[in-house]
Image (cartoon, rainbow, N blue to C red; front, side):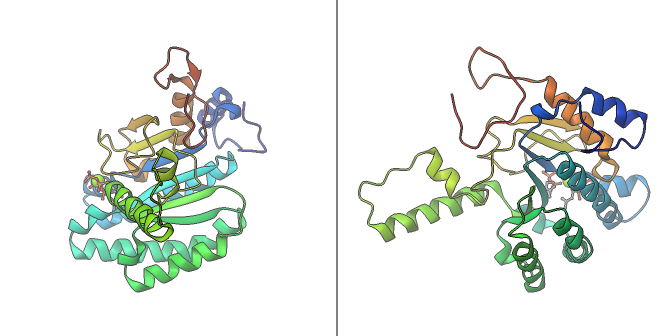
Length: 269
Ligand code: IPE
Ligand code: IPE
Ligand code: MG
């Protein structure tokens, strides 16, 4: 059971969920596809961007809850390479919202000892976004608590392409005639190098697809899809996902059943 020092339940529903959770069985790394902002707004006859704004609250709540529960790593899918296909006004709004979020929340993130990293191709983002992101990473780099990875201008295939090119570069430099690539080499050249693989992947708003997210890393992640739209995704929804995760039987291809505890990156067997 979770002790109140970790997390104080806000109501009876949260208390009931917390009672069911075993802190020794938490995922090491939770990855979330935060989807459904547009639909949330449409249902309220609001412009799509109102949904993005409302989604910020969910992000804040999830980050805080994961940090309190001492989850090692949290990855949030904020903007995909494919999202450039959206209208310019929506993209501009998302970029402004991100900057506003960093301006407001960075002190809290820093105070909570969270280390923020951006995964993706930030070099293709507007200069002012790049600058804010770089500052946030620099400020929080010494922090030793939860790792918060924000997937920004991120694509899973692009990440693999970038990894292979980085490996080729290394080989060229070291004249590596005998160099051989193994799984660890690839993991070490991904944007997520050093992070454990996600053991729990959450997608909100019901879509049963990966949308080019963490293709290599989620090889054995447990997948949890909820109909809840991202702006409605609260702390209780996250706790529900964790309760569900802890009921899963993870087999890793074998016959013996491991309870749904996290494993470290690249660990096999
Ligand atoms: C997710 O919500 C946020 C981003 C992709 C930036 P959407 O904007 O995709 O919302 P829906 O899927 O259209 O409802
Ligand atoms: C995935 O959501 C990307 C993010 C959450 C940032 P999308 O809404 O872009 O994915 P598709 O288009 O439904 O696959
Ligand atoms: Mg969507």
